[in-house]
Image (cartoon, rainbow over all chains, first blue to last red; front, side, top):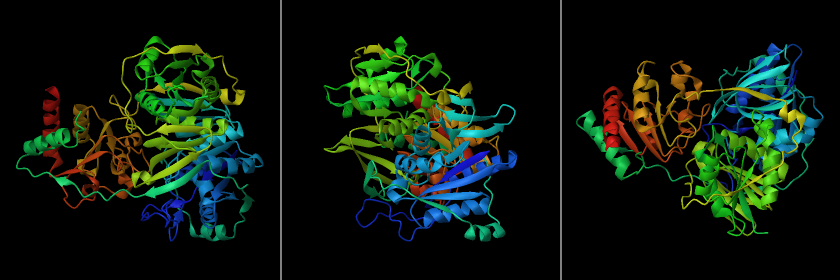
Length: 257
Length: 327
C-alpha cells in the first residue's frame, strides 16, 4: 500500500506566542518548529499500517518554508517514513489550509497514493480544512474526525469510526481516500539514534509551489489580556462554598443553566 | 444581484442541529436584505421547515437524494453549490461541527472561495469579509480578511445566538439530484452508534462541560463528576490522566490530543491544569476550578476557584445546583 502522510511544522507547545512587529501574524523568530500533536499520531498511524500491510511504503510530505519543513520531514524519516517531498512555499501559503492543499495537489498527482493521511487540524491555526480541500482537488472522498482506522485485506477496504454530533459513525471505504485523524489513540514512537543519523543524509525531493496569493490574508494576531487569576471562594462549610459559587454563576457570570 | 447567504443545515433524526440555527443568525447578519437568507438541507420534513422559518430562513432548497443518506459528507458538495448558485448567495455558512468542518474545505476548493473555520466574529468590508477566530488552542486570536467574491465560513459553537422572531415558513424548492463521482459515493456509512459521551449532550457541542482529573483518584469516584454534570445538564469531559489510566474512554479527553471545547461554563474537578489540558479549554467563557492544591496552574486560568476536598465540595455543589434549578 502506498501511504502519503501530510505534516505541518508547528511551534512547540511551550512557545511563548507573540505578534510580529506589524501585528499581523505570530512571530516565527526564535521559535522552534516541531512535528507535534495530530501530525505525530498520523505518522504513527501510517507506520502501523505499513507494518501491518506487506510491501507498503510511507511517503511524508510537507508544504512550507525552509528550514522548518525540511526539519519535520527529517523527523518523520527518523521515525520510519521511507521518503519525503517538500513543497517549498511561503508560511502564508502553508497557513491557509486551502492554499496548502492547492500547492500540494499537483505534487501528489505524480506520487502513487492509496491513502493520504493528515491530522484533523494543525496545532497552530486549527483550520481543519486541508484534508477536505485536498480530497476535492484529487477527486477522492475524504473523512475527518477519524479514529480506529483498520485495513481489511480480504475486502481491500478501510474501516474506521468518526465521532460526530450525531453519534459515532462506522464506515467502510475503498482506496484511494483522504483521511484526517481525530486524536492520538495510538502511542507515537520516538526516533532511535541510528535512524536520526540516517535521516540527516536522507534525500528529500523538493518541489517549488506556484506562487499564489492566499485567499485569506492575515490582518491581526492578538494575545488575550492575561486572566487576572481566579476569584477564590472563601467558605466555612462545603455547602457555603456551593451556595456562593451558584450565586456567582447566576448573578455575576450569568452562565447558570 | 444582492449578495445573500446560504446556510447548510445539519439534521439528526429529523431535528435541526443547534449549530445550524446559530449559522442562520450569522447568515442573517451577512445577507443583504434583498438577497435574504436561504438554506439547503437533505431533510425537508415539516418540523425542519418550521424550525428554519423561526430563524429567518426565507427559502429552503431540499436535497432529498436517497444516495446521499449513507454517503460521505463530500457527496453533498455539488448539491450545496447548486443551491448557492440558484439563490445567488456569495457566502455559505455552516455550523461548527464535524459535518460543517468536513464540508467547508471541500466547498471552498470546489467553489474557489476563501474559507475560515471556527469564527467568533464576522463582518462585511469593501473587499469581502473580515473574520476573527481563536488559534493555538485559544491562546491567541487572529483576524483575517477573506478577499474575493465568495466565502465559506464555519462558526464556533456558542459564539453566536440563533435569531428568534415570528416564524414565517420558508418556501421549499426541491433540487435535482446532483452529479456525484462514483469514487465519492463508494464509501458507505454502515452504522451509527450512540454518542460516546453517554446520554448527555456531546462534548464538542455542549454549553456546559464538567471535567474530572487525576484528583478524582479512582474510576468509581468519577461518578461524582458525572452527577454534577447531570445536575447542570452538562457534557462530561476528562483530563488525559483519566483517559490514559483507562478510567474513561479517550472520547472523553479534553486537551491538546483530545477535543477542544469552548462552552459557556467549564468546571474542572481535580484537574491540576497542565498546558496539555489548558489548550483544549482555555477559550471557555467562564471557568470554575475545584482543586485541593491552591498552587495548581488551573487557578491561573479559572474565573472562580474553590480550594478544598473535592469529595466534600462536589456533592455539596451537585445538591445546590439541583436545588437552584428546581426553583
